[in-house]
Structure formats: structure tokens, C-alpha cells
Length: 114
Length: 115
Image (cartoon, rainbow over all chains, first blue to last red; front, top):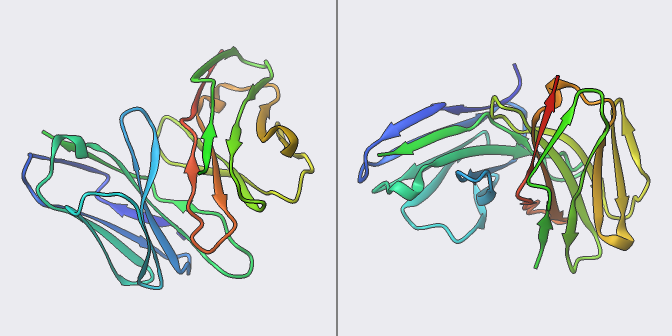
């Protein structure tokens, strides 16, 4: 199936731990994003990479570090997790250039920090 | 600065009723995109529509229709003859028409369609 895939779907961890969320897309897109959805359902962009180059870096604590090994993958590593990091994290992708495709989202990773 | 306002936090209707979800946006850009996304209870985000700022034609897709009015900075979404499966949170979003494609989302409207 062609899609944006995120793993894991659920992540429960304790404060202070380091964790990673992986994202892969097989849609042939060249730009990938991370969005955070908080407990009130508010969605906010965190990062965007185009062909492995960082193009959007919102005001996000530097405990969050995105890594894009290639244009089909954008992983999110979080150091020293805090209670406030609990949220649903969505990966998304699109193809820039002619056609301007809309954003395609993954199914989200629900992170719970205890 | 860009902003999207969805003033309706929650709407409850009975099946087969028509329902309109409001979206008002603010931007200083002359060209931009507007979007609607659906988030059903299962949690995924489903793309519904993208409209660019120089195309004010209304659009209909089955039971869904969208009314874009640049004069009032609104991009409203109507579901005709609602069904229980339409129950979801609906998000309106705005982005610049540039390579970043950074979507600014509204706070969402939770729609509950009762049988």
C-alpha cells in the first residue's frame, strides 16, 4: 500500500527517557513534516525537510531533533522526555513543484509520558 | 501573521440534517491555499479539499460542498444529509502559496451526528 507510515502507533515512557518515532513514505514525495497535536486537538507544525534539508524549524525545544537519512524517511528523536511532550505526533509528506500535491498524513503516534 | 478561526467547538445534529462548519481566516498574503481535513475517532487525518485563493468557485463533492468567500475571508464546509459516519473533528487550514507549504490549522470543530 502507498502511504505514510509511522512507528510505533503508541509509545508510553517515563520522564527523562529518550525515544524515537520513525516515519517512512513510499509516495515518492520529496518533502516531509512533523506536526504535534496536543490534548485539545490543536495541530501545530514542528519541522519540515525537503530532500533531506531542513526548511521549517518552528519554536520547538532542542530536545526534539529530526533526522532525515533520505527523502523517504523523517524520524523524530526526543531527549529527556517531559510530561508536556505527551501528544499525538503526525508525520506528513507531499511532492513539491508542479502539481503541488496536498499533505498526506500518517496515522499518528500517541506519546504518553508518565 | 496567519490565523484560522473555527468558532464552533462542537456541533450535534440528527442524522439526515444538513450542517455547516464555519472557517474564518486571516492572512496578509494575496495568494494562499485553504484546506479542510477530517479526523475521525480512529485518529487519522484525512484530506478533504484544497482551494487556492484565486479560485472562488464553490465546489461540491457528493454530500460535501465548500463555500469560499474572499470578501469575508471565509471557507465554510457544508455536509448535506449528514450520516453517523460523518462524526469526526474537522479542521480548516491555511498555507502560503510557497515551497514551505506550512499549514496553519484552526482549532477544529467536533461534529456529532446522532442516529
